[in-house]
Image (cartoon, rainbow, N blue to C red; front, side):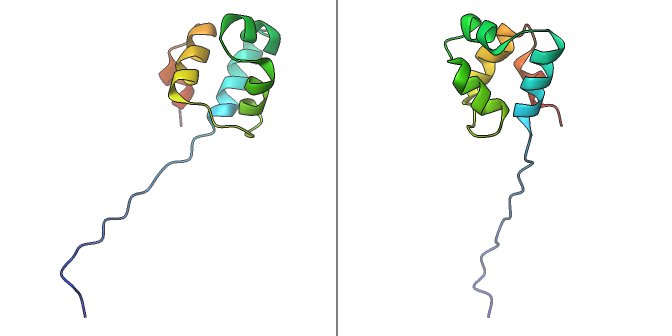
Length: 78
């Protein structure tokens, strides 16, 4: 018997942000070491992000976007 409550289902789109970071970095000819120098992130952490082993924080996404000279929202393209 229904209890009168509506269950709201939320759907999340899984974005492969790591693919876009790696793609833009590659297109611009920027190495992991160079990106490391332009951000506060270690090249190994950037590599883990690009390989899906680590999820970037919003702060890291903004920092990477600025270092790649792209609007960070570009990294969220679907």
